[in-house]
Amino acid sequence: MLAVALSSFLALPALAETRSAQIYPLPSEGLLDSEVKDLGAALQAGLLRQERTGNELTSGADELLAPSCGPARSATVACLAGLAGKGVVLRALVKKTSSGYALAITAVDARGEVFGPVQARVDAMMLAIRGISEAMEELGARVANHQSARALASAPATPKPSPPAQAVPDPTVAPAAPARAPLAATSAAPDVPGAWMEPAGKWTAAGGGALLVAGGVFGFLAKSLNDSLTDKYSSHTLAASDASSYGRVGAFSTTANVLFVAGGVAALTGLFIWAGAPDEPRPAWTRR
Image (cartoon, rainbow, N blue to C red; front, side):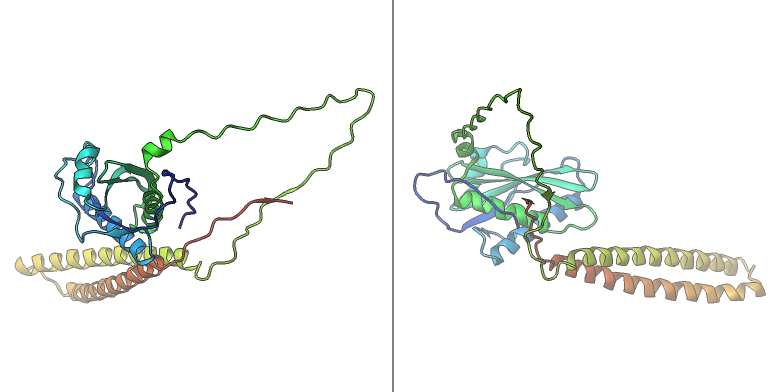
């Protein structure tokens, strides 16, 4: 989902071959165990999605590698290269942001060549794999084109063209007012079928989450009221006025169950729609 323009590292043309990719365990510093587990699953899902679309990287294992090189942040390139085999090892470093997580993903092959890093951002509310899938696509292109970090660092810089010499105006001639060319931002990309899916999926899933929260509130009220009636029964202090409370316990419980079912269905539906949303093309800016 990103347009990648890269020059070749080798003198020979780039080989469009697939590479088996294995994921090294994510660093756990500053993250909960559940967050590390969910982000690792999102990385695997993003890699599998690229494999289905014919990307250069394919999944080399159903599970993450064992952390035999130590924590991801301190693992050496030489150690990771020893795990690559005929493919590459993917290492992702994670940083928490105000809206979720920022990932820097690199690939290391058996020769010790490092590709990347490429950046991916993940929403904290729902671990959508779109940003990760984009990063996997860009990283796969760099591996296929032998565009390692060392090759990028050693590539000669493109010289900037010198500005053209400006003519000295004649002070006796009043300059004509130049015609101003208006800038117009026009999107050259056509409408994408299914563009409604991403916002609709997000809002549907968020609505489902709200229903689940409401169900939890009604469940709490039902339990609190039921516990109160149980205490009165045990202490023989039930009164005739408490009869209506039993009806409210049943109503609260029914409402909570309905909200839980509706919220779960809405949340799963929203996630399904969001995951199937097409990629959005980037607008092209033109001058007229």
